[in-house]
Length: 120
Image 1: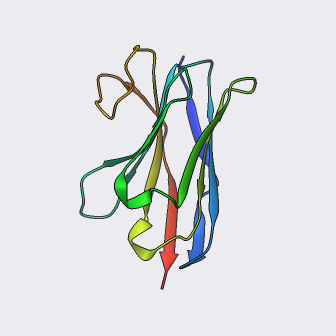
Image 2: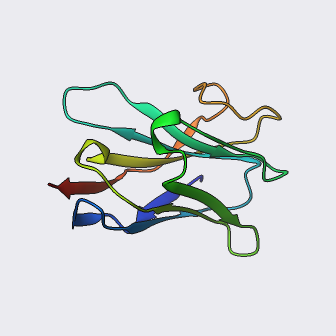
């Protein structure tokens, strides 16, 4: 059974940092972070594929860093210079397809999410 478990969320003030972690039940070539704020659609934040090629949404470039630990089947999201607009539930997603985009077909497996709240 595929399991993804996120941790590391919390409440911080603007300008602060948090590191999210996601433990996966095995290796997945494609891993990603998504987020969903109240009343908004879920949006992709960052992806990392089996060759560690990375993409970011424009609004987090230079502030967030996605990384993976292949040995321990973990995915990370280091979030620095946090802004109130970053407040959302953050989800880890995984897939085995060769491509690695924000498309749900590439990422069929999802965690339950971890809440990030940034106050001004």
